[in-house]
Length: 146
Image 1 (cartoon, rainbow, N blue to C red):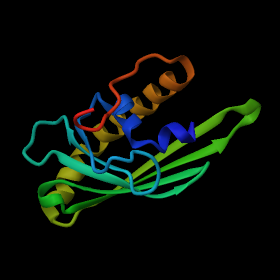
Image 2: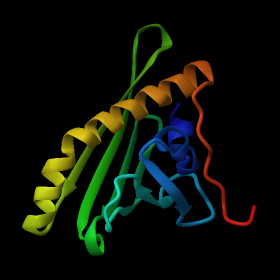
Image 3: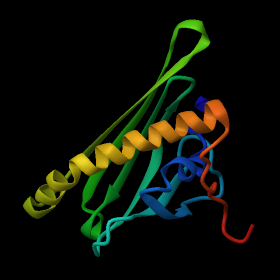
Image 4: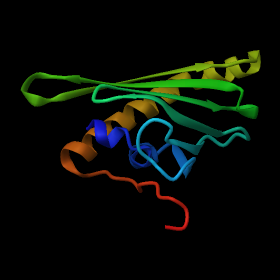
């Protein structure tokens, strides 16, 4: 499971219901430094964002840092944490935090917080169905031209 999450190209598969138009930030898609740019399906002018794997601590934690919003001024942090469970199961936790800079950004962030939480919960469910049952797959991101 960790290997799947540590490859940023796989993230488009389970988040394509709200994050689209993925573009890799480098050719190597695995591990620390791998990053991607995406567009959020919401219809406003400032709907692009990006994130990069800042810390990859196998086999339990991935820290992603990014930016989004107008002029990329909203800092974002996402943390994937994997825990061993009973019977060889793995529990996956994801936390997301945004740090708006301007009051207008803060208001937009507050208004969209509930919707973002629902979309991320659906993404975790899709991740589970992909890894456990090999179904509900989206398209994996590829390097342009290949």
